[in-house]
Image 1 (cartoon, rainbow, N blue to C red):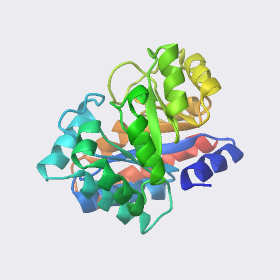
Image 2 (tube, rainbow, N blue to C red; image 1 turned 60 degrees about the horizontal axis):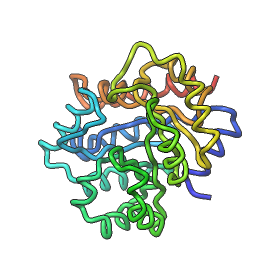
Image 3 (tube, rainbow, N blue to C red; image 1 turned 60 degrees about the vertical axis):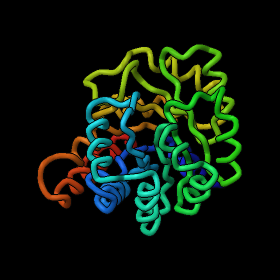
Length: 265
């Protein structure tokens, strides 16, 4: 059983959703982002997403766009993000999903980058702009190196797309809770339960909900609908707040702890 499978199995046994947290690799720098990722682990995250910065993050809202811009200004590359994963792996066996767009991954050369990612301790790849119908070659390469693939679905996804993503995913399916880009929201759609249930009925792998989750109450509500809940922008905004890094890491740790507590009630 892989780290990813074991984590979802443990959460199912505990009858709760997994808490998935996101940190942008290279923001404020490689060492700092590793510290923020470990703060998430210390707060109780079950699974980490490490973002790979890109100049045209079409699925992301202002908070993560700004984080990507800061990381790129420091010269962060996909392989720098692997350094973040290695730093996490020295301290924890929590599963890590690398989340990045197709362009930087292709520029890094998947034939060499995927085995490097596996060696660093990456468990899964989330590529928001990779369509499941076009992912066969990359999925085969990822599988060869023990990397699971994750595909995204939206409330507007057609039945054909749902079936394609559910069939192609080898790690989990990422259900986007709202139409639009990432970002904390005060309210979430009321028909999520029906849509997520339809996806779970077709998926062989766990289904997680992300985009827009910003409070413990929202995490708890969505945790009853899916196998996992993703929180990104609300963490990134705390990581980017003014002040010294130790203070920001403490704020991230406390916020993640509040999310974990909500999911474990």
